[in-house]
Length: 187
Length: 199
Image 1 (tube, chains in turn orange, cyan):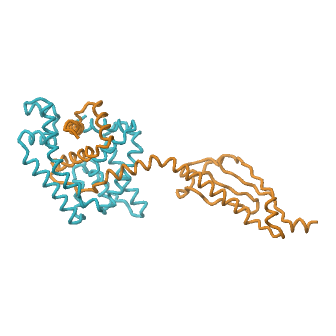
Image 2 (image 1 turned 90 degrees about the horizontal axis):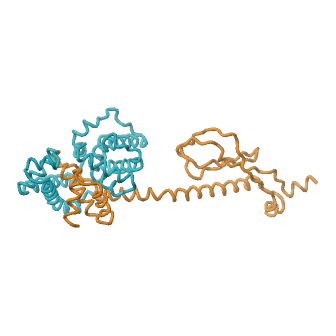
């Protein structure tokens, strides 16, 4: 780390460095010269001590480094959030299917075969839009609500603390299911 | 606009263009002040630092909206106080109603309240830092000592210092740097093995 670069750092601190030189200097620091950033911190600490006639209580030495790491994670977290969003949707869908199966138990002699052929129709309905505010705790996979009477499962859209319209609600309708035993008795 | 504000604005513009390193420099510049502000709301020293980190992250996310109409620190100060209050509310604690204005806050030593709660190790390190800075400046050659004092204590610009010291601006810049560098060299061993990093 040359004296010239550190002298530029000192001049930047006093607002006495040309803007094009600022860009060059920051590139130098970004290039891995971590001591430059620490020296900058020490220059400011010294100035603080001289002005206040006392030193502030020392912070964690890695305060700024940890913060930068957190910021890096936060920036790249968008993609991760989308993955979690999609994962949450998959879980909710699985829960919905499970709810369909478990709340209509087949009681016939060959339930597995009956369920396998039972048609489960699904369609997306678009109710009239209205604004709602989802609760703060609302985040990823929320339990799907199931109306036993109508056989409708509602999967809410994955938004947080935002007024949203109910357009994204997915409604899965359940056609009346008849077990083999029911069918036989009707005959 | 003072040189310091100009420096902040230059760094903010770099951050707005996506330069994270410029934000790192702003953090290192204001970290003690921001923790000091938060310490008015939160008594635990370690918790203060965690909340200060949250405040800086909020500032980074919102920096696109900073238009330079106020000083960067004034803007950062508001974010820090709001973050501290929100932290207290979310923890079920009541934030104090007697807010300290930024002008008053600037006059009060940020770490003053924390000193009472510091561990003996932290207080010892704080005193060592203070003594090291004063001792180093005291031992500097007169031209360096005068230049750094006129800059840091009196807040003069390089041009004003050059006039007072009857020398070129380039010489002023060099003298101030050499004074800071001497202090930096003395602080490095003190801060690199700081016990503060363990807490």
